[in-house]
Image 1 (tube, rainbow, N blue to C red):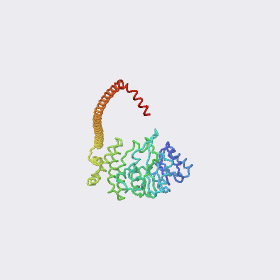
Image 2 (image 1 turned 45 degrees about the vertical axis):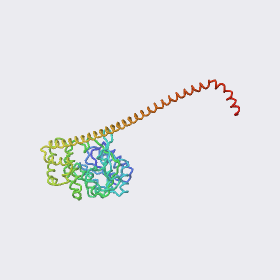
Image 3 (image 1 turned 180 degrees about the vertical axis):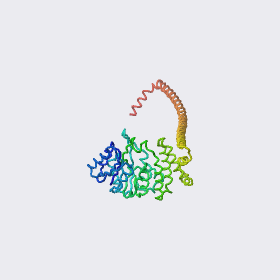
Image 4 (image 1 turned 90 degrees about the horizontal axis):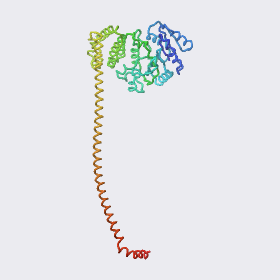
Length: 422
C-alpha cells in the first residue's frame, strides 16, 4: 500500500499528520511525501521522519500545487492500493488496516468513507452532510456497487475529496490529476469512479479534516474561476465513458449550480471577470441546452442560473436575480412549512374538539346515570321509611302483647310446656 502526502508550508501541523501515519496498526506500507517547494520547516521535518522510518520516501519539487505533487506520488507508488492524505489532517490509527482488510475481503476497486471536520482553533469536531453522504447508505447500504447502480444526481453528490477514498492502484493506472487548476479533485474522482466496477461505502469516520483560516480551500484570496474549465473536464469525461446521456441531469446540477456557487464566493474585485467567463461558457452551450429536453426539465434554479447568466447585463444584476429567486423559493418553503404547521394545529384542535365532544357525551351519560341513581336512592329511602314504620308498628304490637293480662296468666303454662317437651 502507498500513502501519498503532498506537503506545502505546514510546519505547525505536519508532525501530527505524520505521527498518525507511523502509528497505524497496519505495518507494511510506504509513505510517499512530496514537498511542494515549502519555504518553512516542512522539508526539514520530512527529512527527520525519513531518517527515522524506512518506509518514508521523500520527493521535492518547485511550488506546482497539490495536483502535481499527487501525480509525482502516483508515478512513484509501488503499493497494491493508493491512499491520499492532506498534510495538515489526522488519520485514525485503525484506518489503513480497516480499509485494507475490507478491500481484500471484498475484492474492491474503491472504498468511499466519511470524513469528520475539526476546528483548528477550538478542536471542536463537527460532521457535514457533504462528507457524511447519507444517501449512499440509504441507496446501496452494505452492498458492493458501481456508478450504474446510482441515480445521476447521487453520483455527483459524492464527496470528491481524495482523503475520503481508498483505491486499488490498477484503477488509477494512467489517470492523473489535472495540473494548474483549483478543484482538480472533481474530474479525477469522476473519471476514477466511472472506471470502478466494485465500490463499497464504509459508513465510518476514519479521517479528521482540519479547518483553518489560511488553508487553500478556505482562503479568501483565491479566485474560483477554475470551476468553469473543471466543469468542462467532467462533461468531457462523461462523454468519453459513454454515460453523458444517462447522467447529464446530474451533470447540469453539478456544473451549473457549482459555477454560480463559486461565483458568489469570490471577492468583488474579480466578480466582473468571472461573470464574463460565465457568459462565454453558457453562450457556447445555449443552442445545445435550448433543445435538450432533460435540461428544460431541470430544476428552475439551474435553468435560471444558466439563462440569467446569458441575459444579465452586469454581474450585480446576475447575482441579484438568482438571490431574488432563492429568496422567493425560501419564502415559498416557509409558507409551506407554516401551512403545514397550521394544518397540524387544526388537526390538534379537531382532535381536542372531538375529545371535548366525547367528554360532553360522557358527562351527559354520567348525569343521566346520576339521575337514575338519585331516583333509585329515593325509592330505597322511601322503602326504608316504610319498613321503619312497619317495624315500629310491630314493636308496638309486641309491647302491647307482652304487657297484656292474658300473656302474663299463660306464662306458667308456656313454661310447663317447654319442660314437658324436654
